[in-house]
Image 1 (cartoon, rainbow, N blue to C red):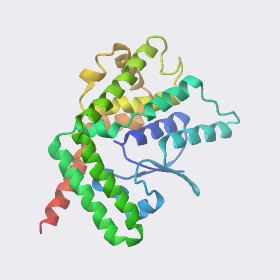
Image 2 (cartoon, rainbow, N blue to C red; image 1 turned 90 degrees about the vertical axis):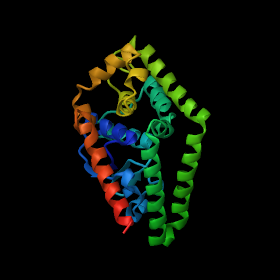
Image 3 (tube, rainbow, N blue to C red; image 1 turned 120 degrees about the vertical axis):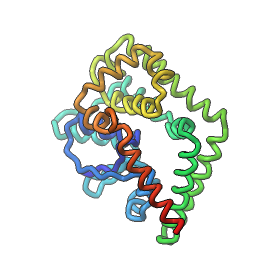
Image 4 (cartoon, helix red, strand yellow; image 1 turned 135 degrees about the vertical axis):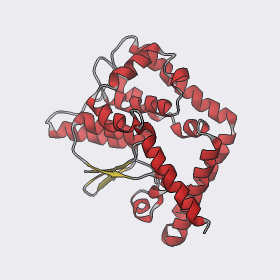
Length: 265
């Protein structure tokens, strides 16, 4: 089994947490979307959405995060001779979290100069790949249009506010639930927790803990608790503890600066 992912991708984190919690062996391939690697023709042919992660088991390729998570759950249950069973509470939380798109929220809280730089770079990558692989031009056109649409959405303050409000609703409901149970869907760790933890990590990466996590004592307590789990240390702690939080972004920034410099000569 192979997983194409990136450490800072929220959806990648969700899938990797499930894989680690289930004890599934897999081959890991890093694909950095900030450097346009997900737009390379070989990857794009496999996954025209260019989104991460991508899970492959033999000839079976899955793109949607929720489908990957459910597939892994069924697969591990089958291998252990058990019937896959997801409680109603777990399923509801998974869907609720999946309904929130972190893209606008993340970009809205990214310094404009970096956001503009990355956006222009990605558009150049798409145009370059389009000329290299004319047979994929129509699909690359879709990605280019999406890039421009994202920029337009960021200018819509009501849309940004809606994303922030939707996140607050999820966190408020989590706070209420965690007053009654140790984990999100009960007293045991479930798929819902693997889906929820990366949401908290994203807030932390953006340095927004004070307004979104620290003001909710039960969510804060929960977050500190799950950080101690082996799966968290492998999937997230390895990249976020101390200086590691900036290491991957630093490498990405260096790559982009070099590429931008070379284009001038």
